[in-house]
Image (cartoon, rainbow, N blue to C red):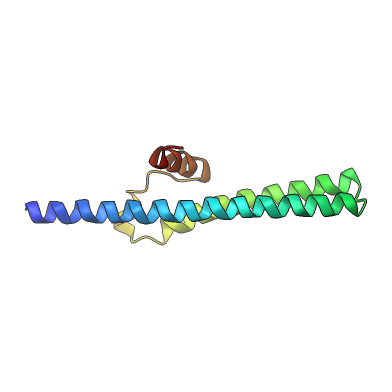
Length: 106
């Protein structure tokens, strides 16, 4: 009985470490995307794009990033074995980032 319990504790810790690593990687990708966005905006300004064109680009970009963020979270959850999915303490990007902040102290 105690062995089974320890197996579950070990599996939970492994799952937690894996999820934390995936979230760190996802946040790092978002940071890289944001850097690319700034480069794109600078190039658009230098090419004399209108404010309307830049705002349209930003709207599309923001929508795409929001979709990517939440899709990445659903992929993390849905690709786990069904019996482990309920152990994931978040269901969307904001909850995931909050979870990661608590885990990493930042």
